[in-house]
Length: 195
Image (cartoon, rainbow, N blue to C red):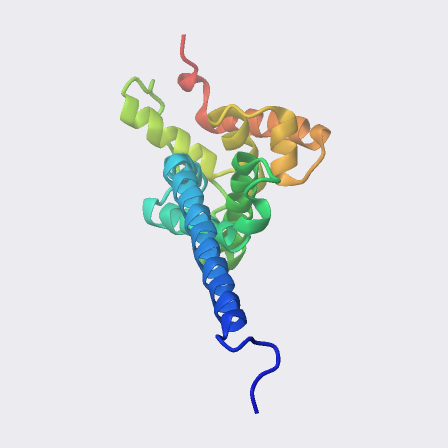
C-alpha cells in the first residue's frame, strides 16, 4: 500500500529530508560559532585567570588546574551565560569558588604553625625577594582575605565588583579588606614600607 502523504514522485519525503539536512547544517554552524566564541574568550582571559589563581595558591600547576576547572564549568553553561552575563565577573566568581573548594579539600593535609618562621630584618630591595615576601605574607592570611586582596588590589576591581564575585555585601568587603591589609602590613614589618 502506498503512502498517501506523498505524491507519485515522492516529493514530500524529499522536501522533508532537505529540511532536516538544512536544520542539521544550521545547527552545526551554530555549534561552531559557539565554540569559536568560547575559544576567543578562553584565549583572552586565560592569562589573567591563571595569574589570579597563582596569587591564591602560589603553585603554577595548581593555578593551571584551577583555571581549567573554571573553563570547564563555564563551557558546560556557555549556551546559557554567553550573552546574558558579564563574563569577566562570572569567570572570576567561578575561579574563586574553585579556589575555595580546593582549599577545603586540601586543608586537612596541611600543617598549621602557631608562629611564622623568623624572617630576616632587612630592607627588601630586590624585586624577586619582594615578590616572594609578598606571596608568603599573602599565603599566611585566611583564604577569603586573600581573595579580597587579590581581586581588590591586584586586579584593581571595585568594592562592589568584589562583593558580587564573592557573593558578600559591600560592607563585608570593606571591613575584611581593611583588616587583611593591616594583617599583611604586620606580617611584612616596617622594613617593607617603601619610600
